[in-house]
Image (cartoon, rainbow, N blue to C red; front, side, top):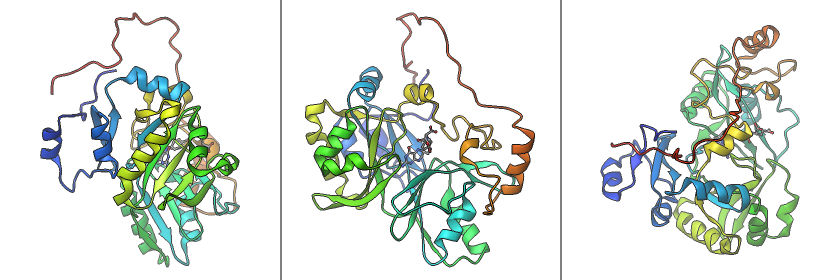
Length: 323
Ligand code: THG
């Protein structure tokens, strides 16, 4: 794996030079710099840590301990108001008629030709929905669709920033922070709560298959406090900083929209077919096109390959390139 071309050198002076509203900082940014972030990428026009300088240790923590990730780049598009249910269904290629408050669902958002334009986790809260997005400009899309269809809704990007706690020891840490009741939260289940007065939504989710939760911080001014709280309570479990890990997610078969997909991919090609409902009475954008793809079968398919053999130990995980 070579260093991606959009990786930014971690020296603070170089980062500061690049700062503008075009590249936003996460509420956890200062904390990640203090904790030694070495690489960033840009996702949803925001800096996302991609390494803290030791990918082997970061993978090890994820697989056998617990890791904390600044994933504030998973921006939310919030939909509320009288027509929220109807608009959210119209935007999602999945039957949401049985979705209850406190549930999350992985949904394909498609355009009218059935192209996959985002693959968010959709959360249904007591009075609003959040599309927790992958890396594409969905605020524009959702507002345009709402406006063109005269939906009576409010659509915004709220001050919400997820912090992921992932790994086999994540549940113990989250139970220590919030109480034993969190062990009953089902996969993608979410509750509106707080941690020492910091407002957040706690969800059993995260972009790994090692188990864990995401803390959706609802007040960006508390990012530093939340980071330090999780870090200090996690010491006994050996917590350390990390980031969405591409070794683990490839081995676990988790989709990276824009990484594994092209602008023309449909959800069947991307192995999201099991989350797409074509035989349903509900209507949504792209349904007719997706019914055609489902009937014909996809023309190409994203597959995983297992390379059988041992890599020479001299192969570095990351190759440094001059910038
Ligand atoms: N959490 C939150 N927001 C996110 C992500 C996240 N936004 C960006 C990105 N990740 C969205 N993409 C995915 C891709 C896969 C999964 C979640 C979000 C995922 N998939 C499982 C699978 O495919 O096996 C489970 C799906 C299911 O069983 O319903 O978890 O991680 N907040």
